Length: 616
Image 1 (cartoon, helix red, strand yellow):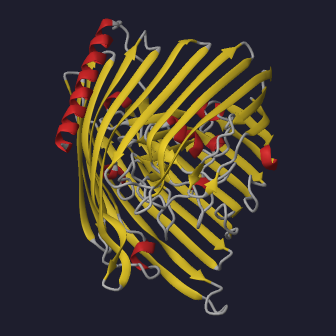
Image 2 (spheres, one colour; image 1 turned 90 degrees about the vertical axis):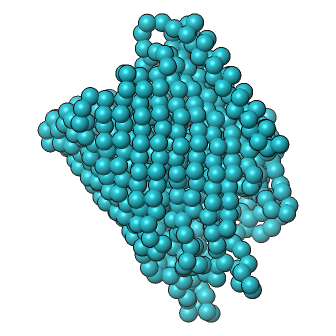
Image 3 (cartoon, helix red, strand yellow; image 1 turned 30 degrees about the horizontal axis):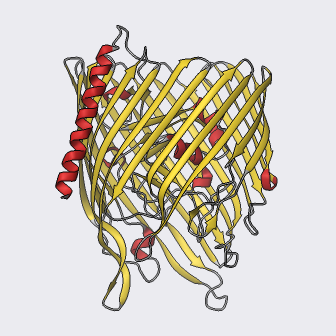
């Protein structure tokens, strides 16, 4: 029965693809569509049409027009199959009642250890618990975001088994200076302040920004306060060599309001930081990078938990063009992560140390691209990862990208993904198991990109199937409950995205995803739909968006609890002067009652007013 359903499903996909191809040929014109260049899919700049993986790109315009201070809420609307949990008017937090969990196609885990977040290509996750912190990523410093929807462990190693989110920060592009500011005020005494700017002269460029958000929250004991700072300095040595340093710091305080009928939870005080040095080379037939990164943090929770962690490493890769149509990328990564965790209030105030250790991983990989007949690209990759605890892990991948016509691109790929067990899972607390092996998935996908109506309409349709094993779950062995490699995963689904700009006055964007999960995953909706319409008229810009979330799993197991809801949001801006833009923003306009984390009600109608300032 299951086989017949899947056969019918894939047959439907093929028929639909054939129909779109025919229609594309009917509307074909002589000029090519504007090819989007990305770096995340291969580590060097290449046309998105020649990468076999499914990649979504969110550009600076979309991010800035959202007037969001946090980055992840923008992505959860714009990326098919991606969902990010929230629990309030702003801020995510950690520990019990935390949000900011990321899932891609039903893969993410809790906390998020199966989706890799990168900042300018450098891994971002806590040394002890192995997950990123959503509050550390602010929208105003971001130039663009590239998201691989599916495993990318061949290039990026552990944690990339569900996908990769690469946050690419701004840098000053032209000589002179530029300053931007945004100030807004809204419901629940929510205040958001931002200022950033760049400077460039000859080979030197600099960019810096600072953000501050605070709110009383929509519930008792749900206050939140955060200050983020970012600095980037770059120098172009000559036409082939350049260097850059990055540094960011985020300091935030939050309170867990607790479940709706319970008592307030813990207070949280967190400091997170990141530093990186990058040296790039780019010649006609050779280009690559050498990167050193260092992430660090200190976490204090009012129940006595305290941790200091770090995650540092070296990334080296070089791409060679041996002959026309060929590219070979060779790379090696080294990562060392760990830290100390304790409870200073345990043992009647004497304290107890849970762990103070670190682990290293080293991996080498090769990724080959070969073009045939000027329209077909074959991609093959292989990685060998060595982990200090469990040894070697081979990671292959492969795919094709075929420009069937000037307006039609077909893609297909198969890729393995994996995630190494975290320090927490190996060593901390009673459920730890130092004999854990990595989690593994195999992903199969096919997609079609179609451009119509003189490139004013773009369509993307993707089908995927993911099988996983060795997932780390808590099980009872004898009388002891511990982590073991017993979990399995079997997901399949479809994703669709379309954008249409018939004139400069009107922009329409929509995406839809359906995920069928054999083993249910918390924080994953079965269906998602997003629709945004933007109208520009003289000095006024009006945006109305709709988000539909259907069968979002809040609890799984013996008692399954699902949530479905629809949200209408609006954003109106008016250009008071060429450098000053006033905006009004409304969210949940129909006052929908809903929750994303179990028994944590989300806010009703919220409204914000603000001012954007640009000085060149």
